[in-house]
Structure formats: C-alpha cells, structure tokens
Length: 328
Image (tube, rainbow, N blue to C red; front, side):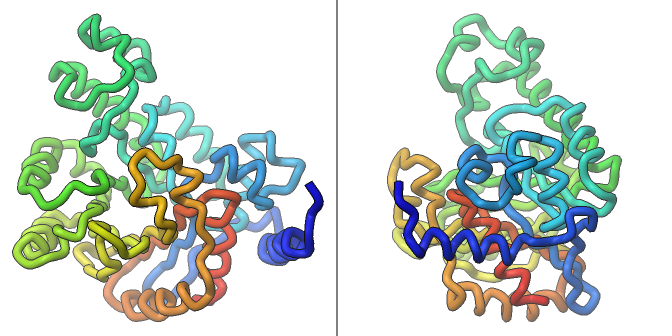
C-alpha cells in the first residue's frame, strides 16, 4: 500500500520521540517528593510490536532485546499477559534479569480473580489435573466452577510468579480490574476479604468500570473500604457514555494509578475486539488537563503510575512519551 505523507510524518515523530540512549535506563520523573512512573500496558502485544513503530528492527523478534529497549524509554510496564494465563515464575525472573535495577513491573490479576471467565485448557497441566473431567475440556469457566482446592492452587501459582518481582523490589502493584457493566454490589468487599491473605502480600489497585460505584452511598462505601485496606483506587480515562465511570480523582493509598484506556466508542460494544476498543490516539488538548491533575495529586502521594492502555498500532507508547514530556 502506498504510504502517504501522514504515514511518513507519524514515523518521523516516532523516531524523534524514541531516539534515546539504548544503554541508559529510563528513570521515573520527580515532582516534589513524588516519583512519577509513565508507561504502557503491555510491551509485547503482536500489533504493538509489528505496527507500532516503537522497536528498532533489530530487536522486534528478540524478547530480551525488546524489553531491554523498552526499559530505556519507560521506567515501568504493566504485565497484562497474567490476566489471560498464569505465567511460570522463571519468566518473571527473566524479565527482572533483562531490565535495570529500578525498573518497575505492575501485574494484572488473573481473570478468575476478578469475576471474569477464562479458558481452563490454558491452565498449567498440574492445575488442570485438579479440575473435574468435564471442566478440563470446557471452553470457558469462572471461579465458581472450580473446586476449592483448584482455586487455591491457582492463587498460589499467581502468587509464586508475582512474588519474584516483589522479592527483587521490582513490583509496583497488582491490578484487580473488575468487569465492565458490573455495578455496585457489596459482594466486591466480601470477595476481596476472602482473598485478603494473598492480597496482603502486594500493593493492590482496584479498578471498577461502572459509574454506580461513583455515586452516593456506593462511592462512600468503596472509598472507605479502599482507604481502610490501603488499596489504591484506579482513576480511569475512557469515553464518557452509558455506564462507564467518570475520571474522578480519589486518593485512597500513599500511591495512585491512572489508566488511559482511550476514548473509542467501541468500548461499549459487546464482544468488540481489543484492536477496535483500544484504537485511539489522545490529542494534546486531552492530555494537558491530566498533566495539571498529576502535578496537583503529586503532593498527596509518594508514587503515581500513569499507564496507557491504547496499545493498538503503538499509540500507547506515543501518548505515554508525549505525556511524560508534558511533565518534564
């Protein structure tokens, strides 16, 4: 396909943004006493790698080279692969080894921990063997379908992986993102209480995606619960339609998280592919107000994680670097 001026311009902008010293690790920004970590949600999404114009050609097919290069541009990344499948602990060790001291990983909780379904056939063989025979070949299952022994084993597996980051001093937080469209229910608090023996091991961030949680008594209950337990409320930026929550700022821990999902209307479509949902590039006028908000919030927290989830075609990396420049 013939490349027009717009494509060449986008590539030249990318080159300007990411022409950095490949031997020098990225560092968090400092605003007062607050460390600001700007990064992306995932660094190895196939579309991000192939079409994002982020990685130099020499490292695109090299897992270690990709992560090393990423760590020269951003000081943090969100591990999203853990939502879809449990990861072996030695993989976390590799990622720690491939990145410089001070590089921070945030980890998205496994789907079964946040009321989502998963494909049980993707469980490690030793965990799959704990399921009833009929469930082993099912296309999807939720946590309620698993025997208690199996569910605890799944949590143990996730904790073993995440623990490698924590022991290395490289864990930012564990993100628990609950389903879109799931409004207020006190069951959330009972659920988190049930698994508190695991949650107490990590800094925990909670993301709810229905505006009911930000209204009246529900808001008061949620924020009080998060503050009591020291969990961070995840501040979302997304399209403001239907049930999706507003980008209200609430500080419930000594650190905070803002996740930039993009503002594509496809987010409200049922079963829309992620490449459509997260196909969005923030304009400068959409990011400028957030820069002012971060400066204001920096006086209330020790750390702020600003993570861009609009990964399609590398837009997350472009917007993250653009946003970091606004804060410098």
